Length: 465
Image 1: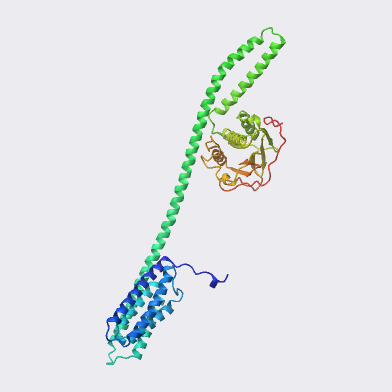
Image 2: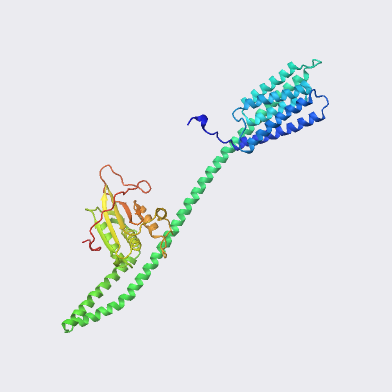
């Protein structure tokens, strides 16, 4: 598109303000001109003066319409306006009383309006046009007494007004530019302050959410430990009674049933041990971890979650995985929470797959379900604190998962298609890199997973077979 076909840029507010002042001066000059012609008795041709003033009235009215629409009339042709004004004033003086006409002071108004709206160069050129107009008037209609003092005095006043108006206009424009710069700096600082306040507010909300989650986990741990203790005492007594009965001479049927009771008691005690293990205070000690152990512990806890037995859980590890550096309890919590979310997202008979693979020094743990999937607008909010789509959810699970992954130098990503399920991937550095590769730091690198996840054969979810 050619530049001359492009729409003109809108005028600045300061240009519109200067135009408003110029229009006020013009309207004032027209009103005064009509009064001078009406009360003046020495005018040479009042009818011609009324006609010239009517032309000025039409021009000013047209200019006013442009201004009311937020535009500037003949914006790119300031000298044309100056020339028309010089001709207009010269004709008024000619048909009035000549060089000593009161209309000669309109040259001053023209210079003041020009200085407010345009550059010093345009103002000095306008001064030249006014001098040319007034000089032409002196040549066409010289004074009868050959007294040129009014002419020379008017020229001196025009020079003085041109200098004074130009200096004042430059001062005002420079002050306006400085004020605009200060205003821009103030707006920039305001935006920066708002951004910092927003960041601090977000950090505060995340810290509050973290504390709330820790309090909930602590309360759950106390409750689980209390239940395990209270249930463990009668179980110990029952186990002792069963052992005493097994020492007696029993028939095969009774011994078979007691063996079955002993097995169930052992199963209950194993559940209690796992519950106590899960409810103990989380350790912050970092160490080298085997991903298989993390998956087994997390799935061993998740199998007792409501609905877990009605889902087809499977897990698979691709190849030999190197150990990772991290906090065991935290990584178990990450996998555990993702599996619980997958259970909640699927119905009875739903399939949940947990996979782990290593590529280029990065370990990816993926939890895939075949539920209803997550809409895109919900995906953008998943990791915000307190955001949840569950009826009784707290909105802290995924938020905590992301915080833990980032604390380990990794990331959490979600890939979901509505109606086809969802996959959550936790990507962590292993510390075993190929030559020339670097472990990505938080906020600097994301690992993209566009390929579909590996789907292992469904087997026992807790043995891997």
